[in-house]
Amino acid sequence: MPQQKGAAKPVRTDEERVKVGIVGFDELVFGGLIPGNLTLVTGTTGTGKTIFGAQFIYNGAQMGQPGVYVSFEEPPENIKANVRKFGMDFESLEKAGKVAFARYDPYHVEDVYELIESSVKKIGAKRVVIDSVAALGLYIRDPAELRRMIFNIALLLRKLGCTAIITTEMLPGQRSLSRFGVEEFVSDAIIVLYYTRTDSQFARAITVWKMRGSEHTNKVHPYRITSEGIVVYPKEEAFVKFD
Ligand SMILES: Nc1ncnc2c1ncn2[C@@H]1O[C@H](COP(=O)(O)OP(=O)(O)O)[C@@H](O)[C@H]1O
Ligand SMILES: [Mg+2]
Image 1 (cartoon, rainbow, N blue to C red):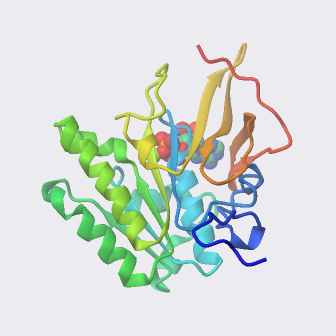
Image 2 (cartoon, rainbow, N blue to C red):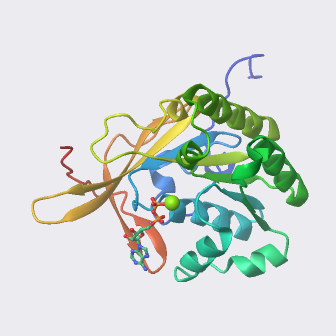
């Protein structure tokens, strides 16, 4: 039967998904992210958001999808050096034109759109990571202006047609999923990384808070940061305390 004009086409098969490639993760989201969608990865500091973003770009480049990593926080050299211990050699991918790192310059706030667009076009990127929009708050004090900028970055990422991840930082004990209360509204999907206390120790756990147009896990699963980077255990459930 021909597809009805205007009817939303459910994206269900594995081939149509953009694989994050983190062990165990894609199972939580029915095979991967939806092409062209914007996903928010949120969590408190140290939960592994930067490692998550780096794995998304690194794995994509290995699968023939060039990627751009835009850092608002750490200098690209630090990120590359930190993730090298997880076996990610970004230098060779950069040389091969499969990956580009862009460092945001706080003295040229308005150039951020140009920075993203030109980096994407230069290597024909299919994947983009913006890490983290929370760091924008260091440079832009006016909350309205900050929200407008996050909104416009999301619009630009959609226009460019890339499958994108933006990260933001939750404060410990905070109820809201994002720092500025706007990140979750501009995103199609939300991944939450938790670092919570069990009785005598802290444990890492991940869930998919929402994912437009897709089935996804409704459970909380354990994950670890190993020598291979993040590893998710999709068949296991985590019992976390939210206090
Ligand atoms: N080699 C490693 N083995 C296990 N865990 C590590 C290793 N290196 C870093 N980590 C963990 O990763 C965390 C940092 O991850 P990162 O992605 O920078 O967090 P975020 O961006 O969410 O602040 C550290 O707090 C540490 O717990
Ligand atoms: Mg980080």
